Image (tube, rainbow, N blue to C red; front, side, top):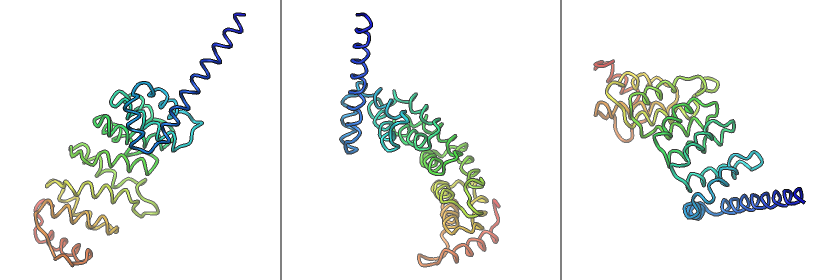
Length: 235
């Protein structure tokens, strides 16, 4: 009799758990805005189920991504521990999702994680890390981004991967006077996109614009090289 009761209780709990998971999966099928509204409304009621789905290897990648987003939306900063756990997972999309979610609910922790994942083996994760670091202009972050420009994993067959252009753009937006030589050196890049960022950075630092609106980028590079050669202060 006791055994039968234990079995029945186990089946009931299993059925309840399955129903909760199914409920979470139904919420994840909703459009983004609807999903966020429901996640916020239900809060801790559905949080644990979202986390279970996100960490379940039986679920598809897109479902796990949405589940982690929904978890962060339902609990905000309280989801930080699970997001950091996701940031260490083997699957690249979980590390990526962790960065995106943390940037919304806990920016300081997102920056800490991004400083590690900017060196991630997955290019898309490194790119997400750069996005997180974009608005942080601390000396430490800028030195890290400058260093990433020269890392071998950001090249393929000696050609720039697009993340180098992304990093160069981020650096150029808030170019600092002490970085004059680094932007000058960037003029020698073969990648035209990096040359454009070099020019943008040099213009911001010096307050000088060379050429006109119709001047070809290759011509502008030459003008800047000549200008810097004549006025070598800081180089």
